[in-house]
Image 1 (spheres, one colour):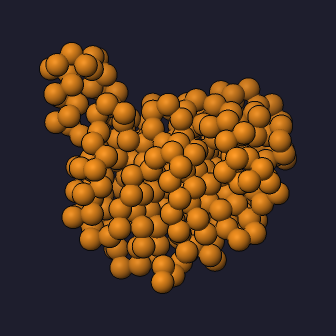
Image 2: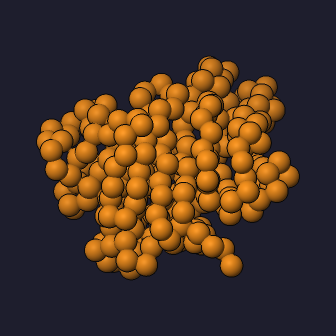
Image 3: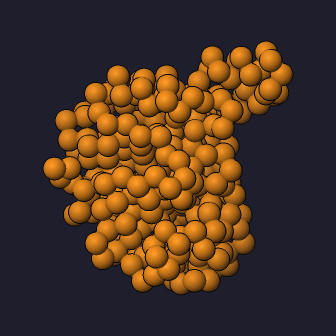
Amino acid sequence: MVLKVLDSGSRRNGYILHGETESLLVEVGCRLSEVKKALDYDLSSIVGAVISHEHNDHSGYINSYLKAGILCMAPRETFEAKEVKDLRYLARAVEPGNGYMAGGFKIIPFELEHDVRCFGYLIEHEEMGRLAFITDTPACDYEFPGLNHIMIEANHAKDIMEDNIISGRLSAAMRPRLLKSHMELQTTKDTLSKWVMDGVNNIILIHLSAGNSDQQRFVNEVRETTGKPVYAAERGLAISLDINPY
């Protein structure tokens, strides 16, 4: 299993869990043409897509994915916001705590905190084991047993944000939304430090703010906290998510 990052951040988000015979899309904030390019113009392996919430950087192209015949799983509110009418077939409204299948992928949504309804996902596949996907939330109080991979938001650092406000690069009006809707670096580290890391092979930091983060610093600090390989999601990144890294 390979994680392919189409993009990650405040403008667009899209990821592919690409296995030997089947692939799962995570977020549909990038054009379908980018998915086609990443998969060598062969969409036959795609078994579905999971979507966290209705904001365009995560779900802006959901209707084009549905028109292409791709099963999309998301909160019901996301389909309503995007005016998707028929939820019987390709558009599947999911609920936290319930289990769903897309090909060989087992998927369990869980509730996150945001300014609209937002889900994280626990995703399991025989090729990669168990992955937790967490984005657009100021905190995550769940603990997940048996994780092999973690994709978690590390959106901003308070000191960088405050420096930007003082210098005038960022409006002070943005502070409340960032603090209430997105995970700050220290919170990311505190969250990960509570989890059992024995089986974790990779930690991928996602949704870094373009102006309020420092990619290398974030990677270094989370690596020091967890003792695990850490990557910052950026366009074009590809990482092996095999259950056995050796």
